[in-house]
Length: 430
Image (cartoon, rainbow, N blue to C red):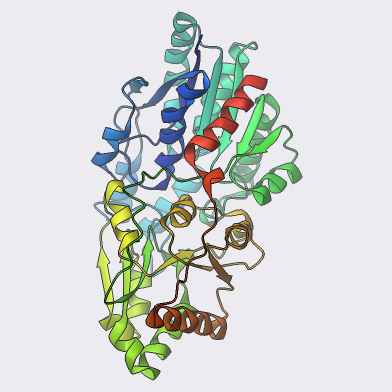
């Protein structure tokens, strides 16, 4: 008989971006392992990235409960003078006026752990009834936003027999974004106190990389396992026909001040200037949210700027077409304190796309280790301009001569179904 599990998540279709994929896919495959998921998510969330095509991926057998949420982003928009606040760009560089600085300060100090905290109390009241009436004895919370974990903690404290798994897609007190909000010492103490409470009350913690697992353990977390992100691609989507006329280097996703690879842009400008064939063949394709800072940097390299193609975020069902049209896939990791364990979801889709991956970041990071293990690409330090230029040159020469630039290695252990099997085994053991 299938066991019910309640998944509490802020990001759910039609939310776009990488954050929604993890639990959308877990919910898709959990029934194969004896678990029947019930999803609890906001009715009217204020996320800026939408992907209506993902609604088609929600399995009909998954029960989805929508519940109203109030978020104070209208206040931020009014204070900052912006009609919208794009994901990851609230703290973007550039001169900020007094009202914009006030908005950042309020975001960091007034709403702990985040602006979705107002959803906690009414959600707990609603879900207490749902748990009883549906005989649900296992719940999962996934953050960020980390206020979602407060829902799980309160439900667990009200119902000690409840089994609670807290999933951390990003760190909490060590999250690079959090540290830029000009928080007062008192606010930091609140974050750390709440984090410790979640560590102690949860029956099990999950995170996405071994390095972040070690970081959480250094903060006192116990009972923490690693289940990475993964890929979920059909045979048709895995068509590996190579682009025929251009050497296309593609990046999909957000590029902001934390992911602005200055050495890469400079290396590409030099390659274009010094090699006429490369200049003719090369295209840089950036798909997703691009900050003014990144676009401004590229504009300072005129020859590279001439070969730049940009497009807004595409529906997830179309990203595989972008992969197929690419020669090299870029993975830009954060330049931050916790970059060691940063394993973005697109890394695993890159693996399945059978295109060489050029990762820029720490050369001993978790992402670098996976690329080495799978022989799917190479990690080079953000600032290693010579190394970047030499590696791109080798890839280009191989492509130009028609040699294969992709190793054939089995990456099926990173499939969403296989990873869901790991999750189900964890739930069975609670």
